[in-house]
Image (cartoon, rainbow, N blue to C red; front, side, top):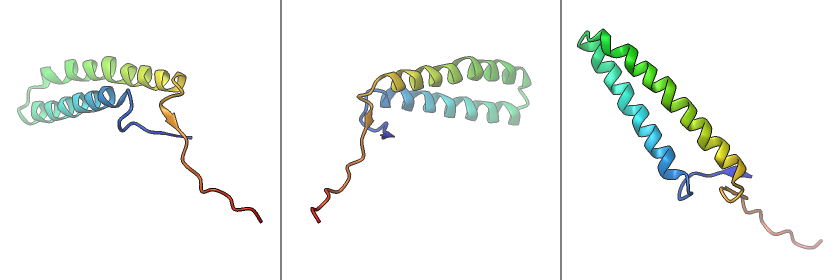
Length: 80
């Protein structure tokens, strides 16, 4: 079985978390370029406290929810 995310019940959650990760990454780069080092620590704390546990919770829910896992169709066997 291969886990799929597209069109699944968790697709929006995963897309939202990855978008938030992108925004925090861009904000970190901007803070470094602007030499606003006091913004770096809160950004890293927010990233480590929110992103990791949220992805872990989604992964655990996907693991317990068997509807998310779809089997890859296999070609039918022909009788010998």
